[in-house]
Length: 172
Image 1 (spheres, rainbow, N blue to C red):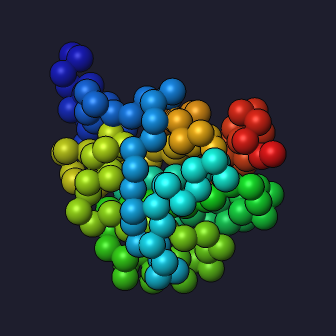
Image 2 (image 1 turned 60 degrees about the vertical axis):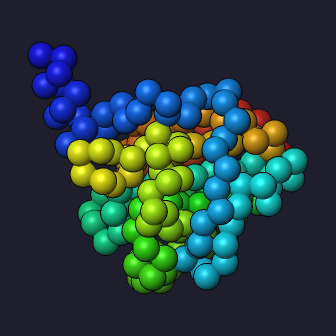
Image 3 (image 1 turned 180 degrees about the vertical axis):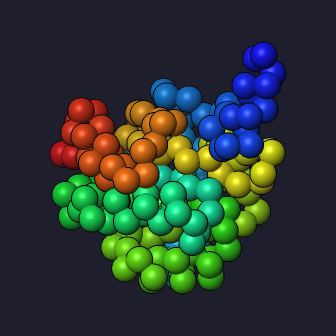
C-alpha cells in the first residue's frame, strides 16, 4: 500500500522526490538561472541583503500553474515584500517562461531550469514526469532555508507566502 501511495503521489507531483532533498535549516542550494525578464539571477546576489522566495511549479501554460502565478501577482507579493527577492521557477526553457510571464502580466521573473540541475538540488524534480513539484522555498538573508511549503494551494498561494514571510520575520 505504501508503495502505491508513493507511486501515485509521484505521478501527481507531490511525492518525496529525493533522499537528498533540501531541508529547513540547510544552506539553500546555489543557483544561477535565467529569468523570464532576460536577466540571470544567482542566489549569491542576495546573500546578506534580501530574503529569497522560489515558488517552483510544474509547467507553464497549465491550469494550476497559471492559477498559482496569478495568485502571487494578484496578492501583491512583490509590492508587499520589497525586502524579498521573489521568483517563480520551472524546468521550462527561458523563452517559454518569458511568454508565460508576459501572458499573465507578472511583476516578478520566472526562473528557467531546463537542465533540471537546480530542481534536483532543491529536491523538487519529480522522476516520474521530469517536472518540478509545486513547492515553495523561503530562504533567509543568511542563505538558509527558513521554510518549505510542500502543500501549495494555487489559488491562494500569494496570501500564504505573505503570511509565512510575516511569521518568519522576513518582511523586514
